[in-house]
Image (cartoon, rainbow, N blue to C red):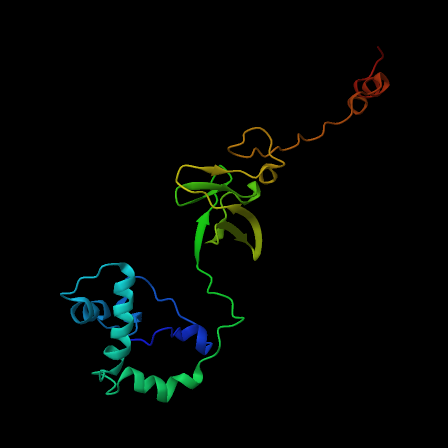
Length: 210
């Protein structure tokens, strides 16, 4: 697939992308062997003194060769089709925020009041033990949501086997830090005076006197 240098379709036309399910070919759009085409036509048999030299060659090849070839499916050269149908739909990138790259995950809160992300543990409020939460990983932050609200935010750890604990998430725990202990109040006992009876009442029931 050939593309015009500097052309960013989604951002410049205001469209939004759609994430397809992994390993389900039926949901994918048609793709082409762009890498194979590039390797065999643009760089096959060539040597470059530097990375910058190769990039300059590819820019010229895209502009002067690939964009002027008639496409087998559309019957148009990419450059001609772009100038005729697409250039007028583009918008300026000035003032547009960059795409946010983030992962959305679902995790179950463990008995240690934490969720596991990429081999590291991040604390959440202990009352959510056993609950399923939504985790967003992006911009070097771990954000945990439950019930439509954000319940925890942590800086993303590098490496593995680390643990981040916010002490506020453990507030109210009794006993073990690993599992909260539910304290059930003992039923109230009747007052001592309620258990005592005057001897006259027993005398009236049994007869006689003491």
